[in-house]
Length: 528
Image (cartoon, rainbow, N blue to C red; front, side, top):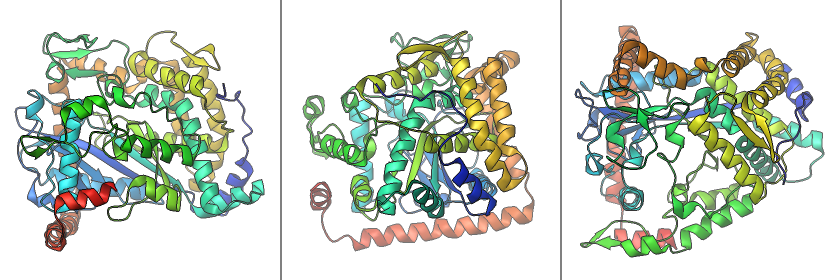
């Protein structure tokens, strides 16, 4: 079984990274996709349409919806600087907050109050063929997994490196591949190491230890216990209920065994799953009462249905499948998908968290990364699950190369390895921000009470608030923070996003007018 290498502070590529940063070249490009439910004044999931003032969810580049009509997704463009990333995320937040009336932008990953499956409206994307495809796909998620799971919100962090750095690394290794193949191979190497160590992100930044009782069925075997007498349920040592069995998982995908060894294996496995019938989905059928309820009856309707904590990504062209884009043009960036929204932060994430993610991803890139066999895959998935469900348990141990190791010991080793990268990357900004983030995270490893999951529970207990009232209070505070910016700045932001919203409505109408084939013919061509 190939698994993590022993701790070291001399990683291949550090000298290249050091020289690159001293030349003041662009290193990392970042983007964020942040979800968030709209909740009404009674703290219920809203039943209203996606606000027209926010534009059309199909064609707006910055503001769309995910599964539900109530589940907003705010998308930044790609930024070379951390400052630019947070400026844009803050501005789109401000615009949304000012255009949803009395509704709250729910700040946490676990939802506001819901009233059963049907209280979660499936997102609607208009009558264009691509819009219908997106809506039918979501109907399929409903009949396969139910809508309750789809009410959870998260944050996706997109990470890529400049071609100049890739060329420098390739030259150091005297690698003769094309740049496209070299990047894809190394991105998959990065992903494998990330999966080996992603449990650390769950411990340090997991922020969903508690939920409202409306999320689970009464008398179901959910494994949660009461936190208070106001309907809050929790696991005493959990870091992230969102990433556990209550969140994104399904049995149909359990046998896919994707451990990201090669691009060819990854795309082949996903492509096979999209074409392979699954008996339980065949029993549902494609249509019910004449209405299409899923795109097909296969293991996956489309590649994006595959749930994972990290994905290799390539920007797709119109109607192009993700695997087609990866095969043709290689991996463009990495999407980290396991991050919770921290309800105590106005944007759900802050700069020290981004700095640490960058360090961990750079470490994952520069460290040796052998292929992962089935045994190793099972081990890393077990480690991730243990931390998600009981990461704050005293003296919790994980498995490394088949041997037990304390979470605290392994975490401390990783922090030490990251420090060598932090020292180099701090030369770019000169403000010691990466070393400062490491110091903050190291304190969490030695003091579990400093983790977001522990702090959320402590604040709820201190203020005698349920999950619903605590999260709502945080949402109101964040809205007040958003409203505190100057009038001139707000006017400029609103003007810009209002134009985008208007343009997106026009673009959606054009898409509908340009469709020349029926949806059934469009779908046949798409699935061919």
